[in-house]
Length: 277
Image 1 (spheres, rainbow, N blue to C red):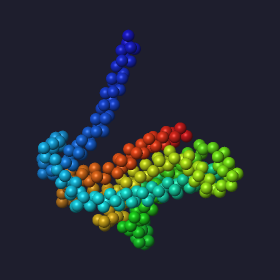
Image 2: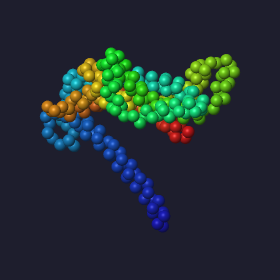
Image 3: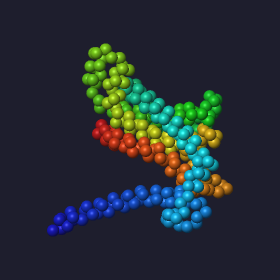
Image 4: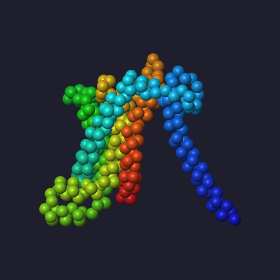
């Protein structure tokens, strides 16, 4: 009897925990939406939704004063460029590391992974000096190149582990048919890496889109500022406009949310494939 009673109560307990987790996840979005559509002079409770006095003023301030629209465009350009470079360079660099397991290649792989342990801000001063000497300050490539350098180790690791799980018989058959190394890689190997490629795209794209520290020092002009520093500009010593900052945050999260909804199933496949290997 006790076992039957415990079994009948277990699903309810699990549903309660799931409902609690959903509530914790949804609650910040509710508070954010409430603040985004509430007038900055409204001193009512943050829990109350302004049903009778909805305003779009915060979104207008975010677009006009905060220049969030331009910041979203800058972030999109930087994200696309950095993600494409990380995918292409990471996949090409991982191919010989996975297929030729020599001591030298293993050393290169370990050395590449150690870059993941280096905080980006620890090399900020020499990085800024280098970018100034190259004339890359306040330019897309000035921000893209450091982000690619810090994103490559993760991509190389994921690609290398996936490539080691793919049999070499297909590549040998392609070479017998006369295909070169690059054609074999792009025609045979790369299509098999679709799950991990989607994973790299999502992880790299999300990290670049949300990047704040490097972009704050490299993109210093209002026209070249990316999304995170643009939202941070609403907070200052003279005062803060929380409502406009939240409205700008919602404008900035929409592209990422749409992209994730379309790539969600590939992301799950990629993570499962990496876990199995």
